[in-house]
Length: 120
Ligand SMILES: [Zn+2]
Image (cartoon, rainbow, N blue to C red; front, top):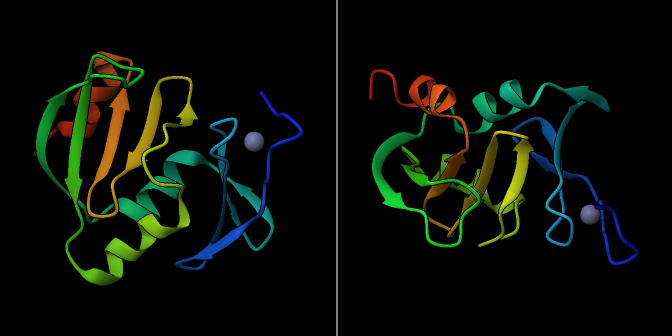
């Protein structure tokens, strides 16, 4: 829910603009000011990340959390566009967070989870 404490300021990263808010958990992607499908935004920023583990979700909004590692420092820097240790709602079935070094994804839907982990 958007509140008066929200600060929705676009951050430029890898040719995109990202708006993510630690107050309401909203996240959205734009390219040259045009709204971008979240799946496309995720793929552009995190498509080269490697799945390195699964965690039991303690305070996450889904039963399991997938842990991804960036292939290089340049890819890691994409995480800086997002607030740390905050669950952001990519879609009603997928949340994103990070700890500066890893991308954390919490998929609520098992089917979605399968797509994410296929081939890993
Ligand atoms: Zn907000």
